[in-house]
Image 1 (tube, rainbow, N blue to C red):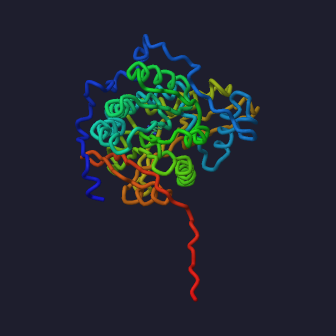
Image 2 (cartoon, protein in one colour):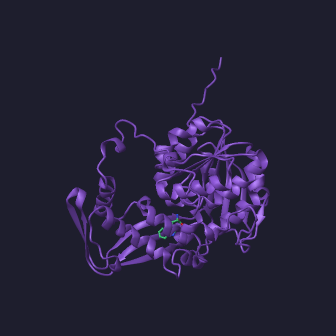
Length: 384
Ligand code: TRP
């Protein structure tokens, strides 16, 4: 393990990824970044068809799915909201801003690790289709695509994201930078994308940005089970996780002074105003983020400094939130490699390589799907 860890170390202080072939981090979410790149049309986005009987097939009304999720979360004790709804077009842009804040070390540390490790990763996996879950603006993927293009001439890339606008922007940028890359976006949820993955083997699934930390333990078990079942033996998964345990830097990362984290939390309620006919005063909402060392996780809440009514027009229902109430909007778990590596192994995902920064704040794991039967029955040989 120690040997693997030592394999490729990068300096987390060298945070500006400066390589001629890598798009500078700062240029990505800027609307001008997409300027002049109009080759790819919306028709390129694959929208997975809902399976008969699935929620997608029975919830056609706009806002109904979001409205139901909000109503369910606000009825919970304690109240909580599903964090996936943070990422509409506005939210995805705000999150890009968070990623560029000096306090939010995750993105640039992961990018630095990938810059140092990309060539090694490409050499180990061979030519594979890269499938990225929750791709966002795909900046970090460009580092990998560079390495795959250098090693194999071209690369297949399938970004998966719920935000169609951010996918279109990423698709344009990547196609312009890598004219030989075969880019086809999948506009949908992870669950919608999983059935498509098996047919893309040989593949490497990218799950970066410590998004794995946003799944609770039950969601994580379902998620890793689905990843394992979607990959073929010999396929890979590249996982980026936050392994920082320093309370001060964790607190700062989720409370940036420029206020982008606060804007992200408030946008969830602004989205309700836009899509559910609510009229919430977003000025009544404080962003509260705290690191809980005992649970090794950051908890993020919307705190109401004045009482508000949340109307959900598609359901014709309303909720009263009292002054001083808090609503959980996100949990971001931090990981220990000594627990995560054996955990992933139980899903047939073997950590072939672990890349980390010198400060040990972030880790990128190259996982290989090994042939395994979960809960295999032990054959008892007959004794004569
Ligand atoms: N996936 C991000 C993380 O866990 C989510 C996030 C970052 C976030 N900053 C936030 C969510 C601020 C809400 C508010 O790091």
